[in-house]
Image (cartoon, rainbow, N blue to C red; front, side):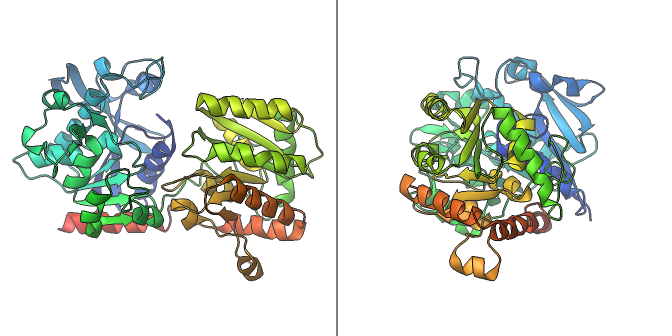
Length: 481
């Protein structure tokens, strides 16, 4: 039996993206087609993707909802079947998906993503254009109310999976929004969607979903602790039998050093010497000195304390003084942006910083750097280290969440066994990160050992091949029940 899956998400690459959520939703939607499953992604029709409405079919008219007319459009693009929520009063806006042009949350985000949840529940119950899902898969807080709305219907509805991509974001709103959202007030309890006197989209989903997944086995265990659970650890402990961690993967067609059009020179694990052309291009792009023999570290990240980039600022000068080069691409905290800009001013020929995001540059950095830093205080899964390994760029990561699950530390035993793929450190302090950078530089000096580790990293499974079978098994178990 071909499984029919409705994915409900606020982002989906390559259409609408602010982070890893989009990459996961897009990649999983495509790979499910190779596993006897048919996936459609329900996504808001933001202004940035309004071109997708061209030649799209209107498959459902939901009438006036959440303050204006709502239609569902069907469109296939980039190998993904999309169901687009056409609601201009909520989505036809400039600036970022979640933030207005002042950098603050849109004041009606409860309505914008409440509609996403309600539409997902309606399509789950009734189907669309003769197609009805066997399972609904809701992603993160923006889709957290899908299982809540499904539970409010009297009719039979499909089972629902909720995936936590980052529990730090929970969709918390004032209780006065309950009526506008169409939530049953009976659910505003400690055992429902009430959270310290407010409404929590995510908590509602965690209570009502049939199954809960998160994006790595270690993060699943961490979430049930007070250190990582962000106030929801009790809810998750109560549902431990329904909670599982399934590692994310990356789209290995988009992230492929053998065919990537953004690179100065494509290469494979058999032609590693060609990687050097990308390092030269990267040094030139940032105006840095050196002949390519110096180790080049990189960061591609949202700039925040969660990502541990404050300790990177403290640890990097020692490595730079030893001769390392460093490049950064990212944006976020004004304090961190200033800190990295000052680091570049201090070492103008050794440090390059670009504030913002550029997809092609991100690919070139992954190919051109020797190692990439992911020193996160917590990291549900992380995709940066997976992309880095795919490109033979060794990750230097903190030992948490999916970073702990995906990177094999270059300790003495792993090096002797020939299986290391990067460098881990713990706890998350500048001193321990500095030690890891020092270990990386020492190993880099042994070109044979470094290249062995590069090849290990490039052979390491980073796609969805192993994880998708677990996802499909979960779907089939729910559909069968």
